[in-house]
Image (cartoon, rainbow, N blue to C red; front, side, top):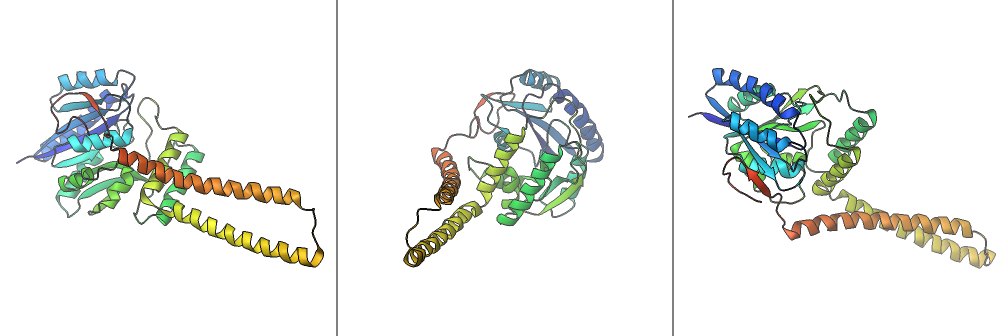
Length: 320
C-alpha cells in the first residue's frame, strides 16, 4: 500500500509564488515517485488573501489532480491556516512548508527516508543562519529563543521552523489540542514524540514580500511566552512583594527621621519620582495579568479557529 504524504502550504497574498512552488515541489515529487512507493497531495490553505491567490489555487487544482485547496472567509492568521491544514490532511505523513521556498522542498525526501527508516515521529528543520534578515530582527529573534528557553518547561529550539514532516499519530495528537490561542512551535514540542532536527541555511523569498512585520513578530513572540510560560505572572508577583518591602523600609525610615530630626517638607521632587515609578510598575504588572486574562477570555468564548468559504474537495471538517 502506498504511503500518502500531504503537503500543507499556508498562503496569504502569494499569487506570484504558488506556480513557482508547484514547479519546484513537483521536481521533488517526481524524483520520489521513482524511488519510493508514494503518492503526494498539495493542500494549499488560502488565509483570506486579498490578491488573486485563490484564483491561482483554483487553476492549479483544475490542472493538477494532486493539488487541492481550502479558502477561508477572511484572514484568520497563519496559525489557523496550519491548523486547518492539519485537521483536513489525510496523509500517512504530513508536511508543513512555506510557499515562498524559504523552506527547501528538497528536504522532504530526506525527511521521508529518515522517518521511514527510524523511530522518529517527526523530522523538523531549523535555520542555522539568518542571512538576509535585518540585524535588529535577528537580534530580537535570538533574544526570544534565549528567553523562552529559560522561562518555559517546553524546549523550543532556536531557529526552529514550522517546516517539518510528522507521522499520522503526531498530527492527530496536535489536532486534539483545541486551544484557540495557538503557538505551533511550542505545541509541536509539547506533544512530545521523537524529533530529529535538520539544519539548513536561510534562503530569501523567490517572489513577493514577507507578510510578517516587526510588530507582528513581536506580538507572536508574546503569544508564545504567554502560551508556554507563567513566568511573567510570577515576575509581577515578585515585583509586588519587593515594592511592599521597600515601602515598609521607607516608612520606618521616615518615622525614625521624623523622631530624630523633626518633620521636614523637603524631598517632594524625589517623592513624586518614586510615586510615578511605583505607579508605572503597578500598571506593568496589571498589564501582564490582563494579558493572561484576555487569552483566557478568548478561550472560553470557544469561537472556531477558522471558517471555510470554499474548498476543492470534501475535507473532514468545514469549520473548526
